[in-house]
Amino acid sequence: MIGISKLYCGTIEPSDAIRYGRRSKDLPSHLLQFSFDKKPVVVWNVTRTCNLRCVHCYAHAVARSQEEELTREQAISLVDDLAEFEVPVILFSGGEPLLREDLPELASYAVKKGMRAVISTNGTLISRGVAEELKNVGLSYVGVSLDGMEATNDRFRGKQGAFSRAMEGIRNCQEAGLKVGLRFTINRSNFREVPLIFDLLEEYEIPRVCFYHLVYAGRGSNIVDHDLDHLETRRVVDLIIDRTRDLHDRGLDKEVLTVDNHADGPYLYLRMLREHNPRAKEVLELLRMNEGNNSGRGIGCISWDGRVHADQFWRHRSFGNVLERPFSEIWTDVSDPLMAKLKDKKRYVKGRCSTCKWLDLCGGNFRVRAEAVTGDVWAPDPACYLTDEEIKATEDWRMQEFGN
Image 1 (tube, rainbow, N blue to C red):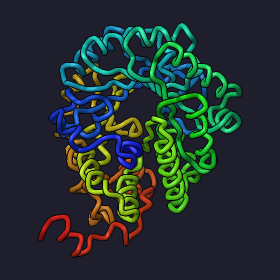
Image 2: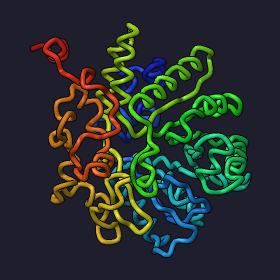
Image 3: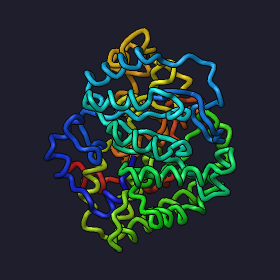
Image 4: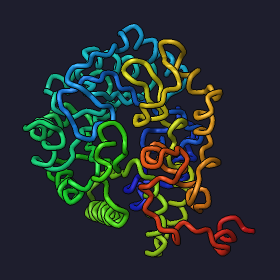
């Protein structure tokens, strides 16, 4: 997760995170990515059932799941363990999390145990009553997924009317005083609508948007060819940066982030150097605090049936089940070779990743994407769009960075 507005527009400084001691449990949500202990943000897919059928769904969600989900009692026990383990955030996801009837109760319980509760939803089920209930239980944030304007979104979501119902859900959240933002997965079929998403932020006074790079997992693994090429990706990232700066210059307080391609961090820094931006050095420090991809360390996933994964995309690999062992125990057990390597994966990446001068900033990017394309977990991420020249560690650079 790269905070474009935070870094490029200077809405935070390194001292902001340092002031809180950089401990996950002490940091406010907007600084959590700069923690040093990287206590995992847990994506909990509370159900596989969904009322839509998105073409890029990483969870292979279905209209009616036949798989067993954690019972209320098992779910409460899980929340207790996560709280004791000092997990800072639970992100309730699915399927469609609002199709789980006890979701408000689980979110409320998580908040009472000292964690922040957020949900990722398609937004179509957020009536006024649901929005008010989510606000009352202490939910911190609602992320609503849109993949373009009406025609494009409805095609991706597999249901006509999904866009209008999602927008109604957003308005209901706003009326209830609940913070709400957009989630947009970039691909070849919708990247030209990124400017329209920025227009939507302004028109509907939406305070936050996350632009997700495509990850080849779930049904998304069937549309790898729909990903952008490297030049297209660079142009889209530049567009996001430009539009973010425009919002900031006009005094519009919007939080803009890119997610799931940590090449965005070095790319942003290199752009700031070309522009002679005086904040470049501070941004480099913040990117080092961020550490790039943290699958298996700073982010984890729990499936509807209790299986534990390195992140929400790596469903073909489980490290255990919370019905058999607590999450805290599974997460810290490095007897599994893959889990052990993910804790320090920079030592194991291969090819151009292994010699990249930005390895400390991107953390080797997405291993699941490398595996999907090459069959090798440790191969370079094919979605890294930095050129060989941009990642080359010259002698001048080594002397500048390390003083030797």
